Amino acid sequence: MISEVLVSRPHFDSRAVAAGEPLPYRDAEAIITERFKPSSGLATAGYRSAKYTTEEWHANNVSTLHQAVRDRNNAERIRNESKTLYTETDAGTLRNQAEGTRNLGERLQDIHNWKSELQRHIEQLIAETDLLLGQKRRLENALDATEIPFAIATDNLTCRERRPGPDLVKDRVEEELLKEVELIRSVQALLKRTLSQAVNQIKSNRDANQTLELDWSDKHQAYSLDDQCGRYNNMSTDTQYHPSSASVQDHVCNRDAWVRFTQDNLSAAQREQQSSLELRLLVERVLQETAEDLRTQCSNVDHAFSQRCVQLTEAKTQLELHLAQILEQIGAQERNVASLQQALFNKEAPLRVAQSRLHQRSHRPNMELCRDDPQLCLVDEVGQISQTMSSLQQQLTESRRSLADLEQSRMALEKDICCKTHSLLIDREKCMAHRTRYPTVITLSGY
Image 1: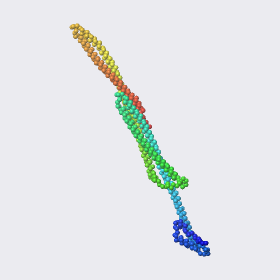
Image 2: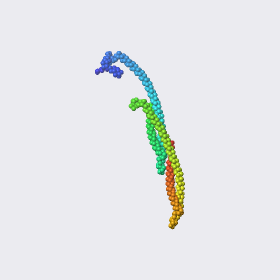
Image 3: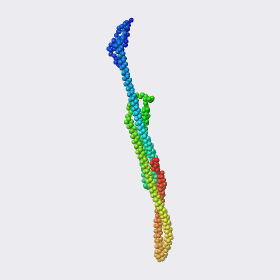
C-alpha cells in the first residue's frame, strides 16, 4: 500500500485577491515549499505531513490582528464619513426642498398676480364690449329710423309733382326737400360706415378677450398644478418616481418670455379697449350730430312749407278779392250792355220817324219839293240819330269785348284760385300733415 502525502491548501490572502492583487508566482511557490517541508519525529513515522512553524503561527496571528485593526479603522472611517454624508445630504435635501417650496410659493404669487390682472382686464374688456354693443344697437336703430324721414321727404316731392301747372315751380320748399333727401342719404352712408367699424371693433375686442381668457385659463391650470406641487412633502403618499422629468424640454420658455407674453396680451387688450372707447365716443358724436342735422333740416323744410302756405294763402286771398271785383264788374258790364242795347233799340223808332218823314216829303210835287227848314231839320235829325246809334253800337261792341275779357279774367282767377287751393291741400293737408310723423331727436339718436 502506497502512503499518500497529505498536503494542505496553499495560503492566499483573500482580501488581496479580492482587491485584484494576485501574489507573484515565485512567492507562492516559496511559501508552499517552506510550509510543506517534511517534519521529523516519532509522530510522523510511516507518512509525510505538512505543518506550520511557530513563527508562521505568530506571523499569521499578527497579520490577522493587523488586518482586523485595519478593517475596524476603515469601517469606523466609512461610518463617520457616511454619517457626515447623510447628515449633510439630509440638510441639503431639506434645504433644497424648502427652496423649491419657496420658489413654488413665489411662482404661485406671480401667477396669482398676473391672473388677477388678466381677470381685471377681461372684465373691463367685456364691459367695454357690452357698451360698444349698445352703441351698435343704437346705430342700427338710428339707421332704421332714417327710413321714415327718407320716405316722408320722397313722398313730399312726389306729392308736390302733382301740383297744377302754374304752381309747379321749383320753390324754396323743393330745394329744402332735395337738401333733406341728400342729407338723409349721406347720414345713412355715415351710419353704415360707423356700424361696420363697430362690428369690426367688437370682433377685435372678442378676439383680444379670447386671448386673455386662454392665457387666464393656462395660468389657472398652472396655478392648480403648482399649488398641488407645493403641497407635496416627504410624507405624501401620491408621489412617484419620474426619472425623465428633470430633462429640459425644447419648447419650454424662460421667465422673461413668459412675462413678455402676458404683457403683450395685456397691451393688445388695452389697445383694443382704448380703440373701443374712442369708437364709442365717435359713435355718440355721430349719432348726436346726425340727429341734430336731420331735425334742423326738418325744421328748415317745415319753415319753408309754412312760408309757402302763407304765400299761397295770401295769393289765394288776393285772387279771391280780385275775383269778387271782377264779378262785380261783370255784373255792371252786363247791365251796361243791356242799357246800350236798350238805348239802340230806343233810337230805332225816332230814326224810323225821321226817315219816314223825309221819305214822305220827298214825294212833294214840283216846286213844293224845296229844301225848307223842316227838311233841313229832318236831315240833321236823321244824321244825329245815325251818329248816335253808331256811337252806341261802337260802345256796345267795346262793352261786349270788355265783358268777354272780364269773363276770361274770371275764369283765369277761378282756375288760379283752384290751383292755389289744390296746392294748399298738397302742402298743408298732405305734406305738412305727413311730416308730423317725423322722428324725434331721441329716436334718431338710436334710443
